[in-house]
Image 1: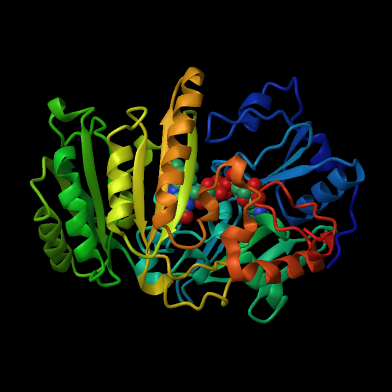
Image 2: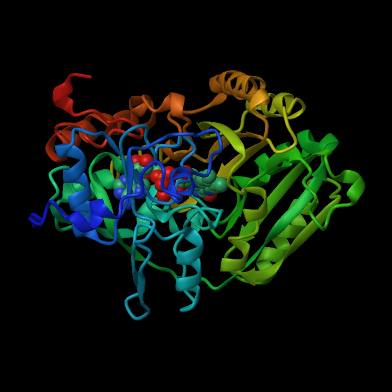
Length: 459
Ligand SMILES: Cc1cc2nc3c(=O)[nH]c(=O)nc-3n(C[C@H](O)[C@H](O)[C@H](O)COP(=O)(O)OP(=O)(O)OC[C@H]3O[C@@H](n4cnc5c(N)ncnc54)[C@H](O)[C@@H]3O)c2cc1C
């Protein structure tokens, strides 16, 4: 369907422009390093307005960016002097408990999704921070506590409504625009603006989850035990070790706050007594200095890390994939972990494997299905004066750990200076993505994030 109503003055007249009292709030994103000044922010309410917004930007000769919930570390939701097509008002969620399917608007946060699905005893595998947007997370893949059991978020996508570069509204699924559907599952926002996602859900209400904390001095041994045991975890079990200075968590002694700790957050999505058995196993990795574990609603656990991941701080991330945790990888993590530049920096290993690995690398755009761990070098600080020092630490660590990494990187963790690394991220799927880009966006208007260029551009 082609939407003919342009110019839709309703959407352009509501635009938030410099000088408006809403402007600064509307242009800010999660990462406090990003300070972009768009010409106008268009908060769309439906696919028709999204179509008008795209054609408005193109007719004015303005670049544009697409905003789900503004969490992308690269700040790709906003752009200087262009149009921000902001989807944050499009938060509608409809659940069909009989078919176990959900239609989710692109402005929904993971918290919105968790609460809506939990009301039916159902869940979608998403990420670990409830304020993240469903849109950007899904289009890049989507990893979290349920990935090993139910796959990436994209592995549960059954269809999408998409507004393409010429303003047409299409549906993509296994039956319609099959190539577009393939590309949307991991290829990011390169092909159009998704105005509705349709997902398959799973029956998950409670999980056995929590955090077990070890002193920094035991980190080497705990990592090694984790490496041995985690490869034998069933799909229900996942644990993501985090090396950082201890935040003021209520279950840690005040004397430990600010000391180096290895936190082992775990989540078991099955029989709680089995979950307790895995908690015992993790405790046996060392001598824990504190813990908070037990059965809880998944939606509660999904918010556990929100207080550590509030918006506004300055952040710089780097990422590698790993198929194994070699001695070299662990030694490098420990080395840089002992020189964390600030109290809020962390090094985490997100565990994948399980159901993620059982999907073929060419079944969706998300290529590196053999990834067992995604490393996130999460550097976080407050003062602009620390920018150089913190970014240098992250880059140095990223470079030092590269020899032990496997192919690719997780697109959703890439900083602004890595947005030209599509060939690295997509590997053997890159040429096919470029061909699909040529078909759906030959003029490369969707280019504000990880860049897949049309094949015809010769790049
Ligand atoms: C605190 C925090 C925790 C995180 N935890 C996880 C995690 O556990 N698991 C995980 O997988 N990732 C995680 N991420 C990364 C997250 O997946 C990405 O930052 C993702 O881009 C966020 O989605 P968003 O909609 O908020 O992003 P935005 O910044 O709004 O959008 C990012 C880009 O996605 C594209 N885009 C967004 N919406 C659309 C749309 N509807 N149609 C077309 N293109 C669109 C655009 O190119 C846009 O520039 C985390 C990020 C943060 C900041």
